Image 1 (cartoon, rainbow over the protein chains, first blue to last red):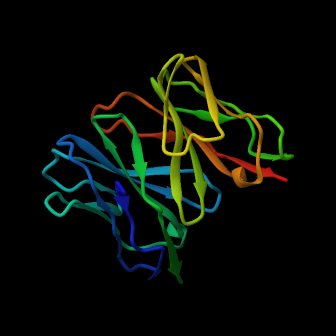
Image 2: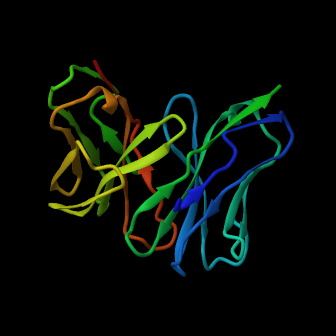
Length: 114
Length: 114
């Protein structure tokens, strides 16, 4: 079974609008971390935001927030006030305490329209 | 800042050649990873290493081997390159699982096998 599922291959958003990128995960560990990365066309992977499985509050980093719903095993990324520079691939990832690996989804390509 | 440096940004090799992809990190991270990135497939783990001379197979180890003789260096080896190994290769490193120890990536190595 897929550890991380991103069901939106491509998304469009109007500049200055908010957008939600979906991510669901599958684990039987009680302790795990959830991450979002951004990959612009240059190819570098940029860490955006982290949510720990025991964190009760949703993580926020500037215009990024992570909508963590533990019972539904979802970890959606919300980008507020989209900017043209937000156009990129976005990857959701999970790290379990067992195995020490990072698992990635297939990514969502976000295009911000002026 | 953690730096992960991949020796070659672009490589073109012939079928059957032996290919070495080198990766060096400068922050004393225990864990190092090699991923392969293909459109629509996301990042797939080839191998990872949690200590010097230790390695673990990831999801797609066939056709690849790795070497970690020093803590800071993790090499990916294609013993006999094939056209289906044409891809983007990403090296990454992290500390042990503890809180938000993120995965830090290199810039990537785009390999073309002719």
